[in-house]
View 1 (cartoon, rainbow, N blue to C red):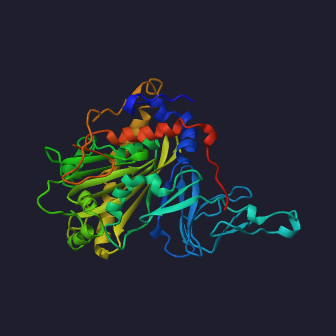
View 2 (tube, one colour; view 1 turned 90 degrees about the horizontal axis):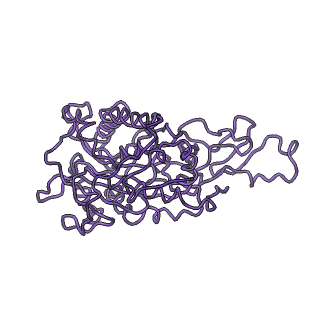
View 3 (cartoon, helix red, strand yellow; view 1 turned 120 degrees about the vertical axis):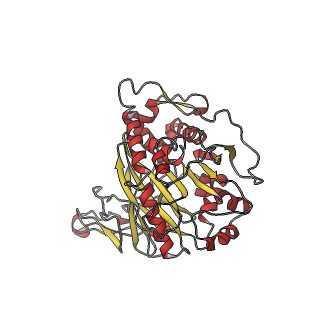
Length: 440
């Protein structure tokens, strides 16, 4: 396999992004070696509750067992490989394969085989034929899973840098966050990397592709643009906060003012500052989970104030030119039910597939993928050079922040270069260390 990144990953060969021959390599080298977000713990609140999700090209069952443990099980019977769960969400005591009737409990153990005594050999051991079970760890309510026994524990994988920023958002209320509604889902003719890059990292397109949102009054485009702080973290993770000018106090636009003191008391001063006075804060957990915290006027309710929304957006690869996108909306558990509804509606009307932002992004990312599929379109490189000349700073407005921190407008491609640095690291890793999924 030949991959040849240019210095500093500011130029990436188009075939490395869109080449069909790279796809299988990505699934084995990138997705099998990473922690992948699968659900928010609030989506499976009681024993037996489950949701069906994706880990790259595999479907998995995220289920809370009778003991309260969260398991992630491959949705594939160990007899013939038939999917054992066909509902997206539910509550159950176990899973029964519709093909030959094999049954499995919520820990993935094989409990029943029709005709076991009559048709199977005496040494057939049910314990050896349970559903494949992934490693599972949680961080601030986010449930991650991996098939690789050698990937470092989740806190180490996220690193102190990204952990700091995720905590700044998700730990600022003692009761934590909860998912509201089911995830929004849609399939698009887009390579997964382009969709991730567009939503979680790229801000260069805001003044062109989304200019209509400013004309509608949903967002305000300022000139000169607000100050942005971009943070490059380890393992391809990165975050960015675009801030209003500081006017002597921390404010949290779009959130109920009764929560503002709680935000400041629940996290460190530097974390409170990071989430305060923001136009938007966003980032990406490598490889395919983006998060965004922003506020806007788009609920459709004349009585609604400006409302903030926290969203998790995950892009699941289908093949080299198609992806499935899922969008989960998170709200503080302690917010009022009215505010939660406003936040949910605001998120749907902006980042949902029929909202004000996503149709622009869908059109663009499909066009990018289509423009890189022709004979000449596959030649040459894509450029990620913006901000290449910038140097990191030691502190931001008096706060020392973890990671490489850059103060600039948000029109850089620092985050993209960090992403592709990690992508290339995994893609050229020795093939003899490829992981194998284990059974419980």
